[in-house]
Image (cartoon, rainbow, N blue to C red; front, side, top):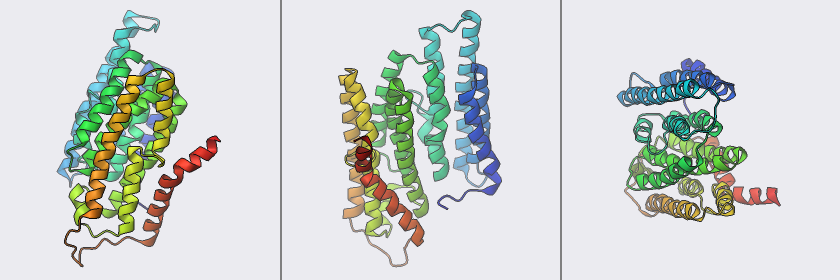
Length: 337
């Protein structure tokens, strides 16, 4: 309904789904690796498109980076099996395995491929890469974590995701840096409890799906299109609400999982990390508000023939999503009372 899915590629979507299940339910590291490889080989046909050079380039870049990460992962587990028959905690091997998983999910400092690939994808593939494709590496990361290493990584994620998104004009790149920023929050949640990570991932997936659906329906890819497009004021307000929710402004839905993570960080006396997370969230909110303020307040020349035709059910769905974002914090508070 919201995304134009090619029926010829439905087979690959099924393989993508089941390969994730294989990877996270395997009882050996080799089984996890096989699941990751099937996942990689099923995603490449989904993003490659002979009519679009950018998507073909994105598919090649994705294959190369994921292959390097897979080789690193396989090398690490084989080396550990040879040198250490029992899987005792060892800093070097845990860092190697963690690094390969971080590269697979596009985390700092292995994030350089991520915005470039996102730029060549459709909105639906962007959504998959920013949400579903992060599940297998993060589950495998939780099996063998190096906490000290991951603390530095999650701080760098939050900082790089914020600073990288400030001067972006492409909405896809902006959301990719937002994804890197949220990855830092997800790693913090994963270090505490897996349930908190699942909750944060669900909330983030819901919010990013709203943005991808919205931009796909209006065929928007760059920030200047928000200024010149003859959108209804209600649509602009809906977009503003969802941007603020994605940024984590109270009382919107996106604030709730971040609030829980900050509480956990403070309970564990990680005050400096909490401060960095909060400050970076404020900067993210600044450039989200800057985009939407310009879009709402500036009156560009609106041509009568330049209209976007949206069906009534699409507008209704967008309004429902916005109301969920707006009232989600209140509903969540009642659930915990």
